[in-house]
Length: 341
Ligand SMILES: NC(=O)c1ccc[n+]([C@@H]2O[C@H](COP(=O)([O-])OP(=O)(O)OC[C@H]3O[C@@H](n4cnc5c(N)ncnc54)[C@H](OP(=O)(O)O)[C@@H]3O)[C@@H](O)[C@H]2O)c1
Image (cartoon, rainbow, N blue to C red; front, side, top):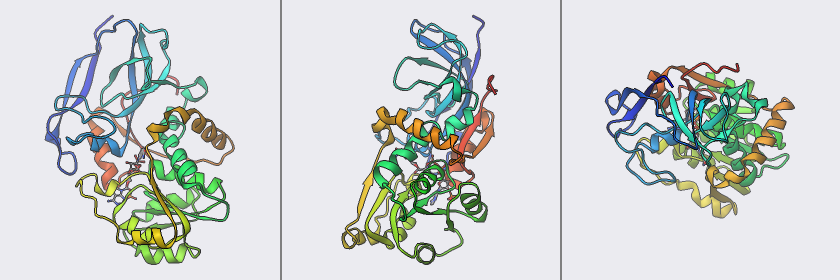
């Protein structure tokens, strides 16, 4: 086999705040040779999740921290270009933990999932809705939020990858859905593209006052992606027996500080429940989630958008963009051309 150059982004220094240029290094190494039971994937898109930034801290999490000198870990999708593994044939489209690199070894394990041929022609949709991001929104909203017809659901980071899908799922369940997002362009997308009933611009509005206006019957389900003052404001507006879904705390990932909400006392007064979830714990139910999401997609009930950066050199900018709010929908970096598109 001819040697394939593999550009990779390595972690060189643990960032404080946003990832700085000197925190990482772009290197070129030969793509690895295959052992028996392995296949080589050419990465087409890397998907950016807020969790990628948490893996750069020297703190234990549900996955170990990325070590200095290692490729930065991230989810991705690609196409099999070499194989010595019965599970993968040349040309198969597979989602995996590709990391910030152009080629990655995959094996027949829990991290690498073949994409059905019916979905393989739209890799952007797999990454933004018919894959793990969609499954996260599904499990959080369906299992923990449990929205009912006529209820009011609120979703933060509503223009983002997880929030935009979570809100649409609540809408499908028959709830009135109010988003919270930063800036007029995002709020317009939340209503016009993702079909929410209203959207609060937390950068330009008083969130507590706007919740009062847009949620006259209070909030039955809150799908929280951000924590901090926005969580506190929504806790102040809960309805009786409300469910608060703790999906993520992006407002504190850069600082590592988690200011406690003062309005938590409303959980008592409103006999409400606040529950976290980790979608990966529900891995065994992802197929159920994909089937439901696919059906809603086929029925025209789910919209998705992507913010696509170009080339491996833009991976760090794309990651930082999650924290500066640069994205609408799923953030992806295109590393190579999908052959099926
Ligand atoms: N529990 C799980 O299993 C699980 C799995 C995957 C993801 N998550 C969580 O889901 C959340 C969303 O992740 P994602 O990957 O879908 O990202 P995303 O929503 O596509 O992008 C992140 C968005 O967060 C908003 N944001 C950033 N800093 C903020 C701040 N200080 N205050 C308020 N909003 C802020 C920005 O939107 P604005 O411009 O609107 O501020 C940004 O676009 C994250 O908290 C992530 O950790 C949880």
